[in-house]
Image (cartoon, rainbow, N blue to C red; front, side, top):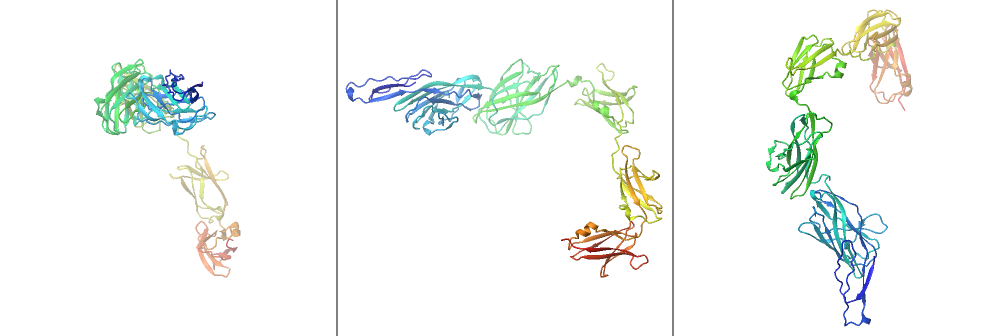
Length: 634
């Protein structure tokens, strides 16, 4: 709505007086009678449309300083220099945080989606906070230039709420602006919601604590701990506790406090911090209390201890815990720490019957190790005697339940029986209890590991053996396995047991002249049976052979200027002489008892080699083998 008035230039503009949210029309003062009407210039004053912007209902957590956005929208275009004032009023139970002498503005232009910085003419300056903190009055220069149609402005004063303000509230604001040719006025309120479940803040933090056992039918003390990281004055706290599921706080519960100067060490009494004004509600599930105390040092920890009553029929469950919210203020700022202290619900150990925990059902099914000791374990009443008997009533041993409610007894030799036992607690007394164990037998033997049989001697059957001489075959297999030696017709020639490390050897005392085909079988007839074969193992012929280089290596060539090892076979214990094609002797090698030889040329150079390897040179029956055109690689 736009309302225009015309009056004499010398007229004065009366004060704007508005009801909440209304537009005001200023009263026009009468013109001076001495001025001629024809000469009167006039001044147009426009009372323009101004509305509150709906910015939602922001959540304001208790005691956590929270910016709350308030905005307005101009309904028409106007000129510049619209100085004015804006006053915020906090709802009951809340105050504005001090130190907000200046509030920057943000703008949103018509047709645009986002907010952006605005010229400083709309920033709120010279903020004055009332003594009770309930109001903040600002002025704004209003010299940001022309006001476009639909211009939206917003500011965000920081609000602090107390617990008494929970629920829906409104922050009031009063906007006044007067320009050369127009005026704006709006009294309105922006909604907020004060909540009690905001995130933690400040430098007081929760500390992880060990789990506490809650005994059925008893009241048990449970503690939580918080850490204060900086020195504080004027320390005031409000604590809310939530009992673990299925438990309550006793009607006469008190919360005692201890402290320590660091994260370790002994706890010291702190009666000046114990909670006061303790109130229990929600059928004993919720406890609240407060306390104001003196100065505190940085790095301190505070432990609060409260009794928790556990019914005799309370059910245990996962993730049971005492919940706490620790909130407060100090001269150094507000804080909030929320956390849990884990608990577990257990039976009263003073009346606990005997139980057997080892072996459990899986252990009974698996059985015990033959001929070895076995330790039986269980729980019971602390200090109670435990008597162990077999199924025929023969006493096998005794034990005693320890202070922690557990016991153990070891049978030093289990033998190979299928045991049936009875474990008595308080045998012969009115409170006697028992636990029966049946069908506890020896474990099935573990299957033998599958380890292949390997023949290591002869490494190359083509070398052959010495006619009419003994020969020792060697190899590996499963440790302790029996290795049988058979020919390919199945005739058993002998056997040997492998060593603890899995090696074996078997000697044929006279190899004769046969071309042997042998099978070496470990664990014959068992599921883990393994075997290896030696084929075409005949007598040595005495012929000299060169096995290295192979034909492929001969074609590929050698690496120049590097060592190279020539290998081959010949009559065992004979001598191999190496000569080049000019007859120059280059070296010699001794043939092993297995009929193999090797000779290394330390530097092959770049020669195309023609070599002769001569067995027992100069003796009757001497033989030779050659390597021709062995050239360097290109």
